[in-house]
Image (cartoon, rainbow, N blue to C red; front, side):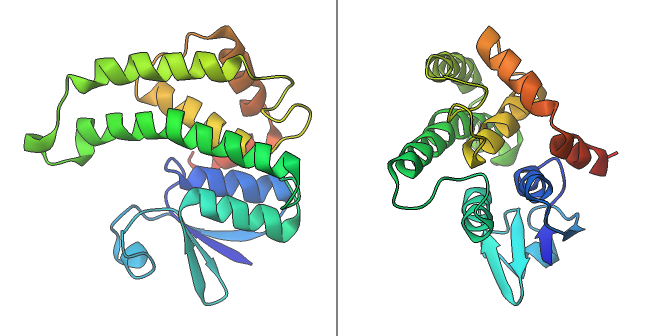
Length: 196
């Protein structure tokens, strides 16, 4: 049994979705960043945290990778060319999509007000759309890895949803269709229902 610490509408969504996709039971502790429960498990105070026995795993991508490897699901085997390509796509999504959204969030409400640069958001929105368009040109199937869903798809779909709530435009038709397909998955819908 796994225990997930984090509110559904944070990056904890990624972990919950993964667990739903692979059919693993879990308990959810719906706490926010910097809560006492999270600070006791993660020095940065960030969510999500996955508790496995007496160990805590932090960072959503590290957690997804652990679960994928442990359960041999939503991943290609380590040491294969397919896994290298999957890892490259995962890092591309983190560097080119997630990082842009995170920078926007930091300058909107996370950094102390005197450290925020509100004007940076216009540049970030331009960069976000450019990066999405380049990524869409590499999409060669229903998923980022063609016919096989991987953890990269979980991260990208979460970012597309995050973009919507952060008012980052998703104008690219390929990415709009991709996001709609991914949100139609039953496991995704089950996680959304947790926040209702």
